[in-house]
Image (tube, rainbow, N blue to C red):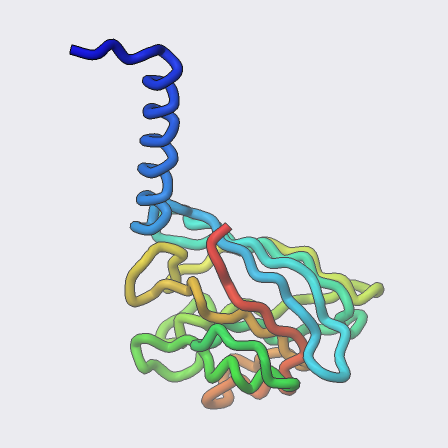
Length: 178
């Protein structure tokens, strides 16, 4: 039997750990996602949104600038991960895997992608955190990985169908694993 050196064993162990770690990512081992919000044509909304799976809920941490000062903005997960159109219409409608009407993020029925309005301060900055249910960063029918986050020009009224009358899409970012 051939003797294997310590370095070869260590290299094999490290390679095995890397491969297993990669498999965990492919099969939902990651709990965090991120979206970089970029402005749509004629707007200034930009920043970063982090999403972290916490049991059955997702913690959403928002850091955006370029919003209308002292105003609220609709904020939604949209069905497609495509922000290429100048107005972000390529992101499609709200993420709605259960075919429900639009509604308030804390009530039922509602779209899974209905999120709380973002409140900008006097400098047009929104730094907020909140938890939501109905979405996931893990694989499955409620996964938001590969979908988009869209910031709107007006507040969501949580009643008007199908979008909450939240106005133009002023920022968009595709959600990916972090």
